[in-house]
Picture 1 (tube, rainbow, N blue to C red):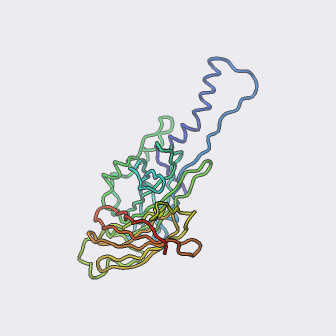
Picture 2: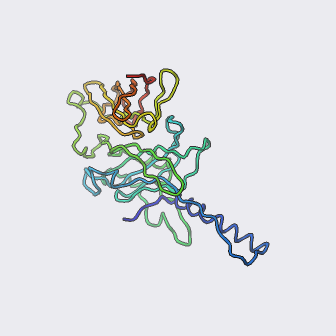
Picture 3: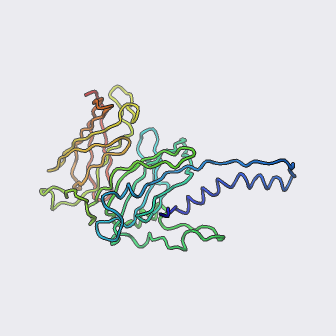
Length: 307
């Protein structure tokens, strides 16, 4: 399997790994260097890796309506469990290719944590404007040029109506490419097979399909002014929800977001979130969100309280 790497990120990795050795060589040429052996500084490679095989599980890759053809990843910085910032990096990848973003710098607050929004298309829905032709990437000695999907603004403008969507999280660590933790792909109601999920309930069948409602699970404030943090105070998150004629429940391992789908646009969803530590219910929070027809909605939650 060949990993497709967004050109902008390949350039960053190459520049960072070669800059120090080249500077040392230039200094020797100008000032002269002793004949003793010299060493070069090694910059550990890091990055965020999206594993294709896990991402498309249940759908597979191919050209059929219910199969993933290509997907886009859009990365935003996150800080201390707060909401994601604006999209800073993007890439469009073939379904069978892992998505890799290398050596991304910290933001102004020093964060190396990212929210990754994934949108995916079947072949019929994939926008031609995002196609990366062979000549758009590695030009050999001529260098690199960017593919259309390497520009977040281009992806936002040209993405059309994806068939699936999900959210992932990941924090860069020195020396390794960190696997992004992703919730399952969720059908958007625009023609992709739902892999067995039901459409919006029959009472809402004539309504406009909504985008998923997401509950961020990185952390929850408490009613005494503290904060419960994923991994330290809880590991598992469970939600029960209702809205319109719909109701259901779902769970995930934090920090993967809870993703309520399918939804109906314009319907307000009431969500009760429970946090579990080693099987023990440690806190509950009441959340709410109104589904949108165009973009996923992130629920707002009241302070968590003891069960």
